[in-house]
Length: 319
Image (tube, rainbow, N blue to C red; front, side, top):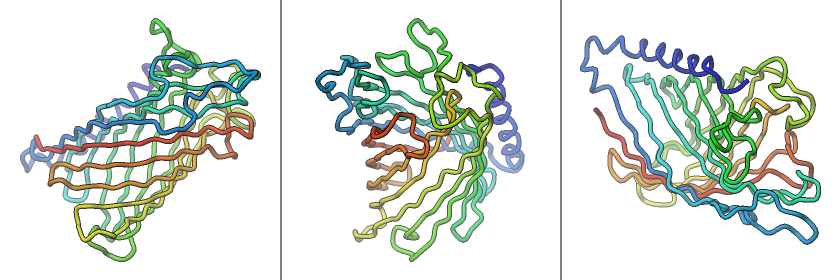
């Protein structure tokens, strides 16, 4: 099933319902003062060492192109926050990730595969609530699509001439989760944060394309629950409450519509956040994704992996 009108109406209906709930307290207050707009240019730079390495001797090449083989691009992210009360917010976020996986030698017999630039975007509508004592909860709907794979008709939404691609790997679903901030209190807040989500991904009972093209391990399974989680530690090595070094680990998972099993990644990250003023935050983050063997979509010893540097300037303002 392609990304159909039904999916679009589900996203819109969920957002309208949340917005209606959010609007109730505005009867007593200035409606506009409850909104915050978030705009963030992000520099995406692929640091995957073999993202465009030449095929070894004796192998052909698939995906090799002069069009953005190693992405370095500026993307624009944005969002909207509506304050329902001092503990509860409705939010919308539009996020993008542009990356390139490392060279794969085992996916196609007799050929080395490189992806070139992969352009993913995720739109999320949700409500979060601060329960106090360091606990923040959230419920949301999300829509994750692959807009483009440069030089290949692989698994993006459309291929040349805007022709719908039956093998596109879009993902849509609902989630509930929470984050717990805990540990010694430092100038930059509690030392640790742990988060977990339960994501429900609805899918058709039969594969949308013949399962000879399905990726993953085992047999096709329809709708599924996923349980990503993360742990982050702030590093209070500087005598400042506006400079926040950090390091973290995430067990990330996605279930695209044309895969038998979820793609599961071990993600390590480190970086630094600088609070410039009450409206602007600058961050530098290094991400390293490594596919879990529990769900590997390419034969071993290869792996789906990539590394990414993100530099983001986040600007927030009221209406």
